[in-house]
Length: 240
Ligand code: PXP
Image (tube, rainbow, N blue to C red):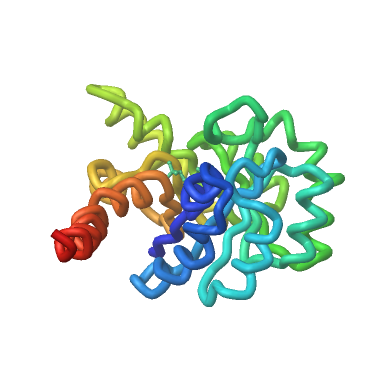
């Protein structure tokens, strides 16, 4: 099992001031040095966090796995087939959403992916993962599409309370088991954090890659603040 860190929100912070720091590529290097098996980024149509130049810098700098998350537009397919990441994770993307809101509706995208999307990525030699809801039926549709990897959407589990937590873990477990029995690699992500990662791993088998972004970047800010503020205080206090 491997951790891949999503560094989108380092770019969010950078873009808030239109500066060139903090640099998501520098963050990616730090994450890999700390033990992450790879990096995930989502190049959105509106370029709200990761920009095209970041994608090329990441491709050069990342030594481990590089997971290119994207909506299946012709523009993104063209960038992705040029970059050739280790994995392309296809997600539903809406301009107005704050973050990816759920998995693909596999029944709805089936024909388009079969005829337009998957052949392009296959021709470029880029393995594909579909970001999907943890549903046994969807695992079967993914197998029919010949997709080698799925990423199970863990967001509903992460937001669940009370009895719904068990219900969501059961759905994730059954989907992971079905995917595995069909020979599909199981990845997972969205909303995972220090509180829910253990219950998730205790219940859901066959998980290969785990993608975590927001919780890690947010935690790093809080853990980093004492060192950073302390160092600035030392300088300023030395002038008192
Ligand atoms: N996986 C997918 C497909 C995502 O869209 C995201 C969010 O960009 C993640 C994983 C990571 O989610 P989070 O930032 O909540 O950890």
